[in-house]
Amino acid sequence: MRSAGARSWAAGAALAAGLAACGPAAEHANRPRPPASIDVTAAIAGGRIHLSPAAFGAGPVVLLIANQTARSQRLTFETADSEARPGITVTSPPIAPAGTATVEVDVPRGRYRVRTNRRDVRPASVRVGPARRSAQDALLSP
Image (cartoon, rainbow, N blue to C red; front, side, top):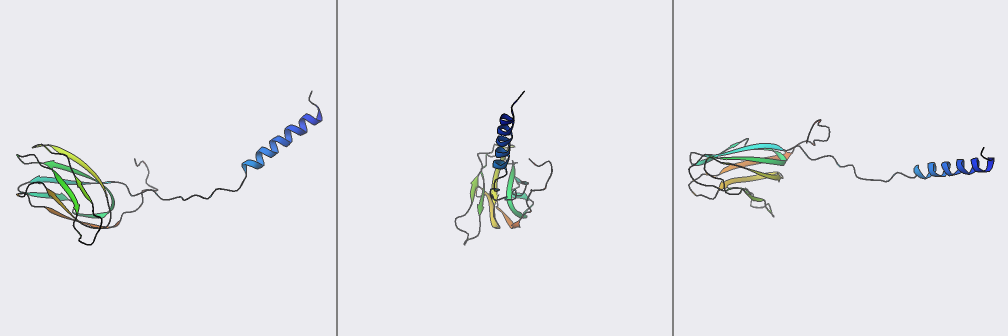
């Protein structure tokens, strides 16, 4: 059987531990998640770059590229605005004929150009609008 002093000591220790756990709440920024990535397709065919969609909101983008030409290509996604400094330039690895590649880029609002390393392929223009909504409340998002 425990004595009254041991029980008092145990109750006091439990009370002290409980009070320590109820300390002041630490302030922290609860920033929302970024927008979910969107897929943008680019097909190099017929002497030009076909892009879909050609306009979308700012945020993460996965560029899915298909080279439908007979020559190896490199695709470059770059800032087209002259006053936007520093700009974005992302280049794919070489894409074999009938091959595919993927490039990921987080784009802010502005105008962009998508081009290849070959002058005989006409570039495409991209317009990026205001930021897309946060994916904070999107269920089953990666």
